[in-house]
Image 1 (cartoon, rainbow, N blue to C red):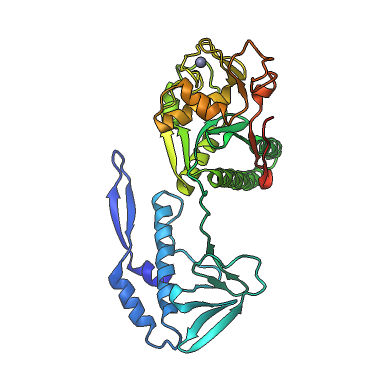
Image 2 (cartoon, rainbow, N blue to C red):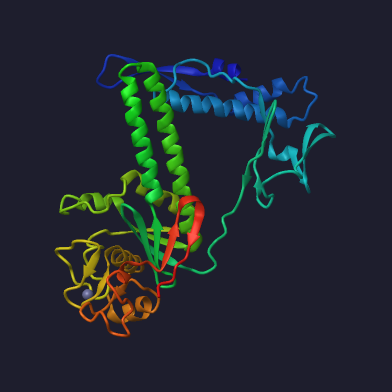
Length: 388
Ligand SMILES: [Zn+2]
């Protein structure tokens, strides 16, 4: 079928603008060819018709993906070849009968696959299985459970942690150290490979590619764990608009959110498609006092001290509260702060001078730097710690 389609491709020459060369562009035939192929292959076909349909569909999708790669210069003008036997089972050929899967082979002839010894749950939507000579690949789509309450969180990104604030949950800190460990591990690997590559060029190139992909996969997997954690606790997430953040970078004295841009971008896009994400303007989210709105012009260290109302607060928590306010379109309001923040969150004190007062929320400067909840990401251990 691949050769059938390949033969029908129409090639056209197109001049490259500003150059002498031409590009040869393929046009893939459409519906009429599909119809003709179907008619041809069904002539002496004793099996279920769906197998032919599925093969045509697969062949076209292989050619289409070849075209996409060819257009971007990653493939040559050679016909794609399928190296291994496989068949994709269409939904219509499929029926789940309790613990077994029925696949129709011929009219009124079925194959049954026993699923009773499976390790996964069947409470999802079954995709189209792929049969190979040795395996059956059975895709299952599961729906993510939604958080029961309508909870909104504003997130502030930092090098070693993601800090969130929500009036219901308080201060949520997600530990990002495992992410850094991962990057460091692969940086070290890369260094060793580069050393080797000075002597053995080909091996070096091969290894570099291998580990580059492995790093990317492992980072993506870890980010999925982190974002799964995030969407499981809240239904709406506020982030700083990264593109606008970049614009303000010049004006900032120091780039204090050192979390790698690509990682942060990935986190946001994953949360966006798994749940609901809002992007707010990033101006002064870490420099403004979340209680009264005073602008701190010379912010240093991890503690934010307000020169107007005396609030002492972890600077990352302060930024998260500001992002939350901006997401909700709320102004800086002391009364709101009293009701929504003081009631639920530890991690700050309102009058920085009087540390030993009995109704102070934090007793020591150390207490001001403790999140109420801490979510540790390595392999999904959720630690919940309530501030005393
Ligand atoms: Zn203040």
